[in-house]
Image (cartoon, rainbow, N blue to C red; front, side, top):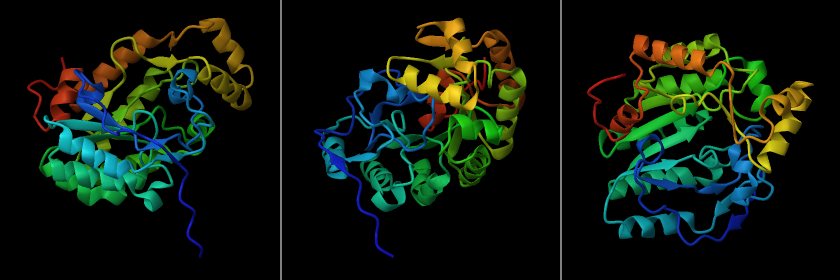
Length: 301
């Protein structure tokens, strides 16, 4: 069998972002080793024109990414938790061949940095050993995006992403190995996923699998964002899968950036109730504590 050709590479000057205060999910830095994503999620904000990513479904690597990352880490005076997955999935189907995320985890461990991973893929299990090593030292947390357990619905809105059952199975294996795991309920699509029953089912399944954290974007954040570029793609995907749904969105939200579910209050109540019942950490401070390897004093408040 002929080896697959390497992905095209884009020039880059650095990989590690400058240190940030109150980073997403308690992170101190971010890295994006890939540009673009093949999962085809119709709601992905990374398609927005403001990011300037042409042909988002075509995945590129960052040229000399691991060498640049090592240089960045050597020059960084303060260690911390590095988030990956904020713009594209670090465990896309090309990762087993490219091994950029694998290499980055090794560098983070070597230089005393922790990691927080956002993914929809069970390919994260390929790095179970590295994640266990990080969990025992500077810290490791893996967050799986789950917005529904309905596989048919997920195929419509996340057509090339691994199904939710595989994500939950991977979460279970990671949690059993001692890696802190969580779920991201973002976005919850209005008129499709925004029922208290759906939110509760995701959280119960995640807790059963061993998750310790759940994040839904904060109070009132049950909904989806839309910006130029992404909005057009989203509406086309909606209309193809759910005829008439794009018109319903236009009527409800117009050109708004944040499109909240009309049931946002009920969703928040259900979210908090299940998190408290199952001991899932859901506050920003609590999640940050777990991501940094500390135990939050209060699981929910």
